Image (tube, rainbow, N blue to C red; front, side, top):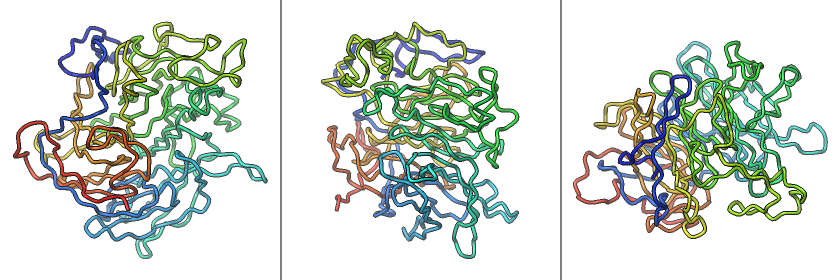
Length: 489
């Protein structure tokens, strides 16, 4: 693992007072680092809270002490009693379009004043829909606000906040959070451009809008970005001016950021997917460029070269067969060190950076497929206060990473927990600081408890609970939590 604390840090990137330490490259590992064998020292008791959901994507603890969940495939917002698993449907959104693996009803955030009696009982959601008013089909994303009625326990009075956002067939992102500044933050993926089925599409993660684009409400360049939005959908007057233009764009150069959270001190972190290496956790700062697709992870020329398939010549891209490891000679290739990005911000943590010579064909991608991200601020578990909690889909664990005020190393070394044969999509933390709730995917690959990749998920479409039970009483490198013992139906 690149971020192992025992590795010697030799490369220091200093950008506008923020310093990120990049460790020295090592010999290629003999095993894939995504296979987690050592888990944390605390013990947890696990329980199945609810099953039979339809693609749970967002889970958050509500002020009513219920779990609020979006169902990506089911197009519903449901409230789940964490004690009994009983659920009620708050709203079904028929306009949601869901046909692929990264579309549907995605992010949700609760207004900080929800159920506080001041007439701001708002819930915001992000979802995909058909943006073509005619007979055609154009996949788009919107942000919509609902009002919650505590008497009927329903969401109603929909108001579209921001519409016509681009959304492709892959890398949709879509995480939505309310910031301490009263603004909405929405993650947008790069639509899978320059990759797999979309390999001939131009990647727009580095592209920025013109003043004319903003005036015309042309959001085409809102790909591979994190947006900062007023609650009414307008552009905040204090958003960063990037390339001479103020828009909704807060940061750019992202690939597929599926996690967003604010931490004490009002710092924004994201988690996002790498290509074959370098899944990232980033400290997100206004106006910064996170490098993608020109740079993956640190700017270190390790196991990544930017291959621009859409620029293939003389052979057109459409005539080529995609191979992420061996692009043909007609595809332009560039080392990371060839790019000079004045606002580049390296990641706070990667999963994983591997040196040149890593055998991708034999070992597989060195990634964990990060998803939801949350911050733990309680003192209930010794040593956990002010930690990031990162869910993963391929590794099937939650990583805890202690936060630091050191600008050179804002995120500490990860420790893994809650290993099961599932893909973890998101996490919610109860206010008591001892109960954790995890949403699991309906399908897909994960590393099973035996260390091998599998599509046989133990608890698909479920909410699992893990309860802190004190220090672990056993010795050795054993799981810190019991595997949920329920077979796939």
